Image 1 (cartoon, one colour):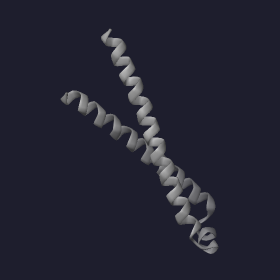
Image 2 (image 1 turned 180 degrees about the vertical axis):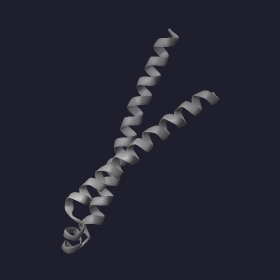
Image 3 (image 1 turned 120 degrees about the vertical axis):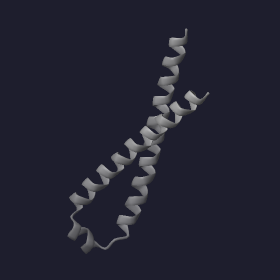
Image 4 (image 1 turned 30 degrees about the vertical axis):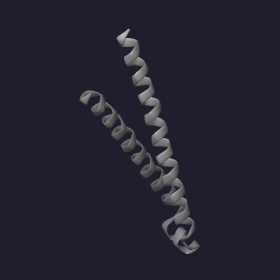
Length: 82
């Protein structure tokens, strides 16, 4: 019985982690797109669109990974304290 409860809690924790990380990533992408769209055309051509896309993708993925790990640590710490 306890193993089933643990399985359900771990499953719910994973869903919450992924959902929260995706929300943060979506918000971050939206803010970055707004900032980039305010730049002039020459700047974007100088930096190169492919480099911008690569940097944005890798940075957002890094933030998603960090948020997901932080949520996991916070939830685990709360349950250990309880």
